[in-house]
Amino acid sequence: MDAHTQNIMSADEMSFEDLVAASAEGEPEVLYELGRRYLAGEGTTKSTAKGRKFLTQSAEAGYVKAMEALAESYSSDKKEGWAVYFEYWSRRAIEGGSLTAAEKFADYYYLGDGNSNKRAALLYLESAKRKGDDCEREVSILTRMLESNWLEPGWKFYGDILQLLADNGNRDAKHMIRREEVPEPTEDYDLDVFLSEGAPLPETEAEEAKPARRTWGRQMGKRSITSILYDMGIEFTKSSNGIIKTKKGKEIEEDIKKLIKKGYKFKYSYKSDKWTCVDKHE
Image (cartoon, rainbow, N blue to C red):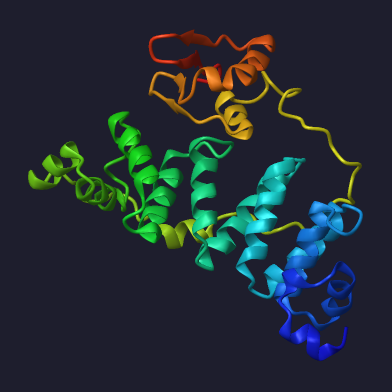
């Protein structure tokens, strides 16, 4: 393929061999697509190290999709030190305008390994702002956080959350705003401060290891059940006293049985068609 043909063809339409040849020019979209195919093993032998190498080159050139892909890659394998890379590239992607990164980073703090209500609430608020009218999920989660007293009135963005909930029909939020029950913030923490946080990336990354087997099953008991359910793609709600309730019932019975065999005490309700258990890490 000649250079002119490469220039008019989008990267996702190019063969793997043409991507390799074109990558020398340093085009971010080409580097991203090459990295993505290495990660997926499309047209070549799967290589996490090579995939991340090209994705990093693309991300460092400002390509937001590469930042998202890097964050997802580290979040998926969860090898030692993964959180530093996940957090770094998620922050960079949010700075670049990524809605996907804002959503997944919020889930990381609320449902996953981050364990920070403040950062989760801030990012759900940011995700809602970027979505506009289509922010039902964020409103639902922030409503649960408000009802569980997980939102701190001293947060700088607390009033913005109340306004978002009020605009979406939350009566408690409407009453609080109407009665002027929104206190002055006691800490100067906002998205800019959040994005400035986080450790820098290590100078070198460890050499690629042998492909890892799926690990969530072998790690049960060592991780929060909320993190495990999130990895398995099982939607759930969690009350302030640690009671977890799945959003589906019989449809996920096989997955729940796997957890029960590992010692998690799920109970099924025929009335509500839901599974419940208590988070051991509460």
